[in-house]
Image (spheres, rainbow, N blue to C red):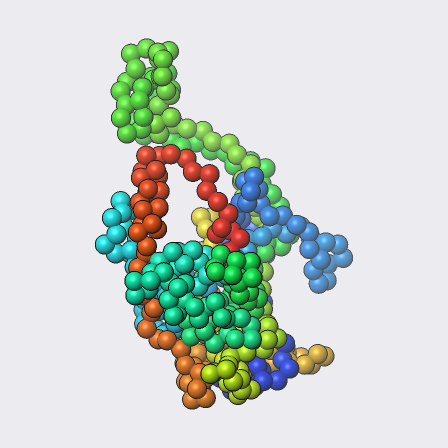
Length: 401
C-alpha cells in the first residue's frame, strides 16, 4: 500500500473526489471485555444510542466515547505540540499573559487552544499594537472573511477553514463569518453493556473514625470536644477517614470501538481564495490541497499521540492508520498509509506549491497582549477559585468546537 503523497491530494481536490476517510477498530488497552469509562454529559449521564450497523439485523446499543468536538480539540492539541517541537510551521495567534498580575500564571494561549479559534473572546478582548484586536488591521481582515474570501483566514488561522468557526460575537454579531466543519471524527463504543454500580471505599491509612468530629474548614480546623457541638463536621468532610462511594457512572463494557474520520473535499472546494480581489482556479486548488494536507496531518499527529481519552478509557487500534479516497461512486476506494513524518512532508510540499502560485501565510505567530479588563477578569476568577467558591460555569466550550 502506497503512502499518501502530495500528488494524490492535489489530484483529489481538483477532481470530483468526495472525501478521504479513515475507519479503525479499537479495543480497551486492558483487553477485550475490560471496562472503559465514557464521558458524562448534563445530568451526569453517558451518551447512549442505538445505531444500525452493517451485517447486524437489529440496531445495536452504542455509547459515545469521544465526540466530534473532542476529537477536533485533540487534533489542535497535536498541532500545537508539533509547533512547540518545531516539527511544523503554521499560522497561529497567541495571547501572552506573561507578566500579568495573576495568582496562577497562565503564560501564552494560542488560537489552537481557545474554544472558538480566531473568533474566540480571548483574542477579541486582547490587543495588537496597542489597539483592540478586532479594530486592528489584522482584526479587520477577519471581518471581511467568508467562504468566498477565505484568504484572510488562510493567512491567520487556517485550522478554522477545516475545523469550522462562527464569528458570532464579533462586530457583525450573528452575521459574522461562518465556515462549516470539513473534517469530522468520533469514537463510538459498539455493543455496549452498562455496569450497574460503581462501588468502593477510599481507605484511610490513619484509620480516623467518623465519631471524632472537627470544627472549621479543610485548611483551618480543630478537633471538637463534643461531636454534637454547633458546626461540628465529620472528618470525611475535610477529607480525612475512610469514605465509601456508590454512584451510577460505573463504566461500560463493549464489543469494540470504532473511530471514524471523514475529510470532505466537497466542503473545501466551496472555499475561494482571492488575491487583490481576483480569484484563480490554480490558487483555489493550491489552497484546498494545503487545507486537506493540514487536516490529514492533524488527524495523523493526533492518532500517533495515542488514544488515552480520559481516566480508565485507554484504547488500542487493531492495525495501522489507513486512508481511503472516495473518488468515484461504484469504484473500490484507493487506500493509502500515512504516518506523522509523511504527513508533515505532505503539508510542507502543499504549502510550498501554494506559495509558488502567490498564496502565502504568516509563519511567525501574531502576538497579542490581554486587555486590562481581561487580566482583571481572570485574576478575580482565580481569587474566587482559590477560596473554594463553587462556580456554575457556562456552556461556551461545549458549544464551540
